[in-house]
Length: 317
Image (cartoon, helix red, strand yellow):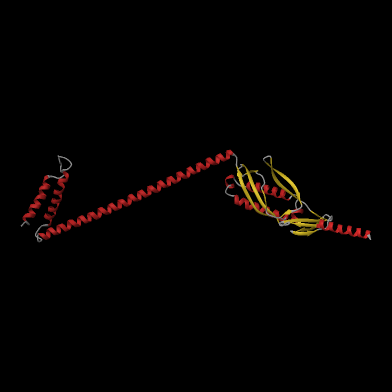
């Protein structure tokens, strides 16, 4: 009886040990690849899972990470049995890239990826993180080596898109989804940066000269246009003034002729009006000095006065 009890207790304890050893609790966003006798059996999902102890074993995956040691990023390779299925960022250190115009630059990049198929991530590559990193570096050198330095700064999005296509194609085989590829910084040599700064200053000076010349040209055109319009307006004003003056003189002649009951000669009336205008200008001429040299002969003045006298006496018979 005691032997049977001992056997039952041992059997019960063995079952409890097997149950405890076989229970595996998988956290959310994690996965475990299980091998049975050396071959793939299943992938454990989040929650409570049970495996056969000593028969089923989790397959480890190599993970390469960078740690700051002594002020430098040092690559450290670890083996883990639990595969993180969350989106992970791979911030690989800066690397040297030679552009199409033979300029050596240092590029810092970051890659975001997510494990979609844990089975492929374990069996399709020996070191998943290292494979992704090396492919990203070589693809980055290839894409940036096709461009000149000036185009690199304005083509970051284009480079990111091309890298993502390359990484996504390879990631499908490895069970990885590359979500984003970002170029963080592009470092150029000091002498090249100084030359670019001078080139930028020269370009800005050239643009300033072009804008200044364009402004002066527009100002000259506007000034010429204004002078043209002013001349036209002055000419039109003189024209209208001359027309009004002629109209006024014509009306004056008509009024004088009408006052004479049409018995006056038109020549005498015209002479009379000219004499009046001449006499009006004499005070203005005398303002400039004591001596006055008249441009007209004295006979002209007498003729004008004679016209006035004839006008006062009446028409000739």
